[in-house]
Image (cartoon, rainbow, N blue to C red):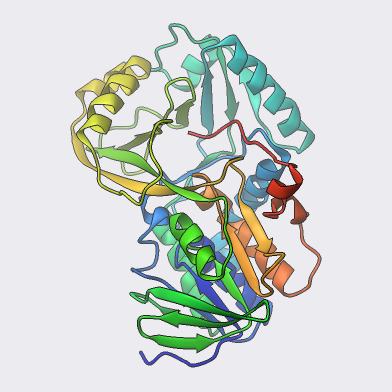
Length: 384
């Protein structure tokens, strides 16, 4: 495909966030929108994520993004007028508390969630075992559960957004790497790629773990850094577990897919900043040790494969959304810290509303990068 020479808006990153933004912009009549992706669509963090969708967060900003995104996901195929199944299953999230500090934080989170009409509740260890019968409740002090949380297929969600966007005229250039940006008089003017240059007045940085790299091309230092997280998938077995089980004490999550396989992952607080996406033996052994203490029957399962992906981490675990205060026309939609997939539907709407000069469904100023200068951070406590 021959690359066009001018676009009204260029989105860098063809993951679920970039494709959601593209669709929402095209639907709003934003003109010629272009998506640039260095691999194939969803080849980065989106295609490597754990696929969970939850509203149980500890900050109002993340709760609102997740709540509104769930509403969209519940009706996404119909909304996009595409007959397909995104495999969105609302089997719930069970968040386990093993310390008094966790109990205190979880109950504080529940108060916030209740004020936002998120149907989460506190459950005793015995009630948690009723929800997940194979759960080992030794040492468990309690848990929170939201039946409206769940999981969806990241590839299918991204594909639906991309198809709907393309139908509205969005152009997608895959296997196209951005090599630089030109900023003139404080305004974005050109995006340079390995396939040619495109003139534009508006760039959206949705590059995930590479967001800092893209920002530097525009002379912007974003407080976002890449961090490796690892996942494995097991052989499919008969249904054992409906909800996603998550433990911040063990730093892990685990769910059973509709196809019967278990997907599980852990986070390492000592993981260095890097673009490393190589899976490790350490992960395999640690994952096995940790998960079998919580869900003993999983010890008998065979692992089919394992992989790693990048979280685009932000210091307060809350994304950066909106236009840069120093470079006109440069927008960021990154720093999701592991929950970009689950809030992408609402992020796409917010960015489109902002660029089109429309009122935003959620106040977007809270997500500005300037919050780090002001010292007004929204530290999210609930990240694995």
